[in-house]
Length: 290
Ligand code: FAD
Image (cartoon, rainbow, N blue to C red; front, side, top):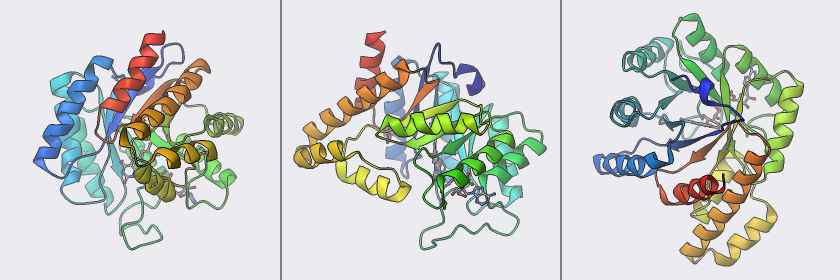
């Protein structure tokens, strides 16, 4: 199933993102998480692409396994980092041969120790170039990409970032998924600005329930997202009580999702961090409401 066909505001789908674990025990635990989330009938799940090394093969293996053994549509992420176009073609061929129909194409972050992204010789500088390549190569994938309601960390201005997103979408993207955000105002404002410059593909909000405040502070520092002052103060107050952090994180994300759904989003993508409880609580509450 092509994901673009299940992104419909009149029947929004829930989707879950995982990362490829480094160990076999991690893989076994992730597959249990997938099993626990399956009853929520996700529209699709996705598996991120690592910065390098063996987890990259795991992305291909995991999406193949999930699709074949659970019947859930599984999307692979793929980045330009460290890859030549021949290597990227090879990964895409493997995905196609395994029956994978959806790929999320990204540039990726600069490798550790580098502040600026440098493509390898024969590789790509921007996700847009990878999208163009996949379309020219005549693969039949439905293509997703990333977007940033608060602006990408490297960009000089949100307007520049939006123009780059438009170029990326025009190169052949079918939908985009947002970076995590904790204040829906960023999302609604971003969608409005995107529509105004002619970006017409579905924009799927990405939601990460806070289950560990320190970890989220690290993520948001890295990706340029902000935690609203009120939520930050509430989290500071309970940060040493793990259960209270989860309750507050789940409550905040549930309220965010209810507002997003009531305003007609095409789906909601959950950053699960390979764990099921928080996502199960939120989606359970959302489904109970309809
Ligand atoms: P691009 O769209 O190429 O943009 C990167 C920067 O370049 C932006 O600042 C943009 O404004 C600028 N830019 C783009 N085109 C041009 C141009 N023509 N001229 C000048 N500037 C330009 N990372 C992983 O390593 N693995 C993953 O699986 C992964 N999954 C992700 C999923 C989602 C939903 C999101 C939101 C992010 C994900 N990331 C992942 C992180 C992502 O790789 C980083 O945010 C990365 O820094 C940017 O990738 P991109 O595809 O958005 O890049």
